[in-house]
Length: 162
Image 1 (tube, rainbow, N blue to C red):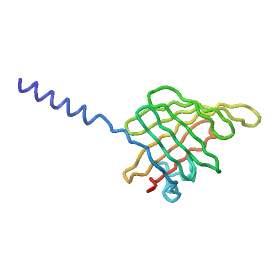
Image 2: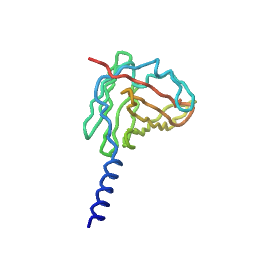
Image 3: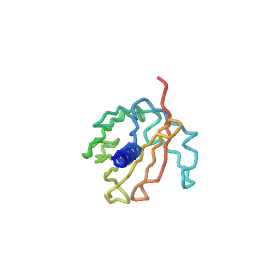
Image 4: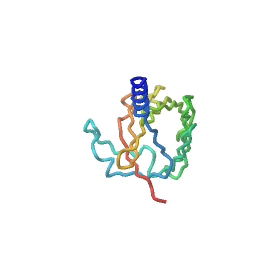
């Protein structure tokens, strides 16, 4: 009996440790150019404020809403966190279909849209990974295809004290 109780306690502890706490991205964020200039794990530096100079995030169990002010225009993007796809409109009336999913403590947003390249319509696919580092900064990394339209990049945002 003692062996079974010990085994159950060990298994329960392993399950609790394997559960990863998902970050809450809610708040106001400001682009940090200096931290963004630090090379990524592959040594690349691409200075890109992917979500503008400032944005606000509102998160609950079902969705993540980003309110981005860029070029005096408010862009609102809503991502479903329950596994369903969502549709948003980027500047230039570009329809973007996305699906968000958790990978441990990182949020992966896979998006598809169309664009013009050399006079032809092409499908653009991107993956943006959102995570919070140990300093509390928001790290956004982007990859995608075609490579000619999607430059791998990384943006760092610090939480604003408003």
